[in-house]
Length: 543
Image (cartoon, rainbow, N blue to C red; front, side, top):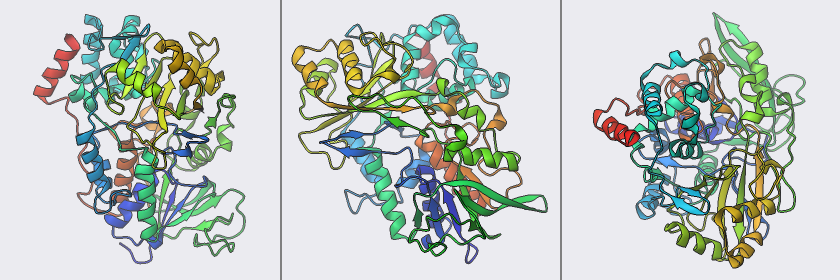
């Protein structure tokens, strides 16, 4: 590591925090030489989780993990001490929890208020052959086509598609190549249709991952510059290589200053002055955000439908400005240009009694925390709910219960509430849920009396939109001297997006490349050429 080298990380989500950890643990950098800049008041990015029993809890997303595929994540978790169990790492705590609480979904699909056999995939011969072609034909063959371009109309009515779509959040108009990557990466789990391959965090990922990560970084002296919106970067070119020379916050003017809090007299360096970047410094850029411009509703009000234009959004505006200056930096408009094709609504429910949870345990046959996803096949919104292990939040009282759900089709009218999901309040979403579960009066009364907070996310699946290979930049683009892209909108060959693993792997690659490390990146595991596993998977598809 070059002496006096500084690192600037734009974006305090999981990718940005992972980059900081790897700079310290793998590259030997001092934490005091690392600054993380973010426009939000606190860190975590899409890994949010907040609230109280009185006002209701909120988490916009629920994340699933897998033992074999998440190798970079386990590497990261093995470096961070547990917040709740001193003496253990996050990885230790994670696997000890999953040894105790094992997922085995017994009610994956519900239709007309009754559990149906999700193992009956409903595939026809053409569907099966199309899936095999998806696995083995090269990505270049499919280009930027959509999933619906390669399957029959019947395929999208099968149990296979319903389980696939609601597990990974795919829509028929999403990228065929992205689905191909998922199938290639998860093919060894195909025989486990009861979701026994899924692992979950012991509690809300913000509390479990973000809080201890932040504490570890603070302990190592990393500087956090929150409430600071970066709108642009300045570059110079020498010998065909480009390097970042200045980081431009919103409203910046005048000469550049170091991001040490001294430029404007503020303790956290949150002023508007430009930040000078020397030739030896490193810059890590989180380009794009799947939760950008989210809006939050309440029991009485739906989320606001309007989102600001992309150029007003820090995540998209910064990437847009960079793409005008740097070749091979991608095309952000592909991902922010069609929110009607990338949005859905999630909701978090807080209850002060356990009658609904007891009902769900009796109905599904799963103890709370072991059932993973329950999808209502006949739901116009394609609503899915998940009851995680309790307590889900660290500060959650023992007499409070929290669960999460979402709808893939927020612009369709409900079956009971004749409104678009995106136009519904929390109370109306709960009424629709009661309809699909055919709840008795007592349980319905309890559920309707709880707190349901809906969240509209216009870009939540934007990384799945059809795209050309060059629409996402490589982690380190050709010609880069000192900068890298990290997060969900970078191109990592064969890797799947919309996962914790993709974000962490991008940070691992970025640090390894810019710091010229060797052998620090765990292999990307793909089992589609494993004959034994393929036999089991194909047998499942053909039954």
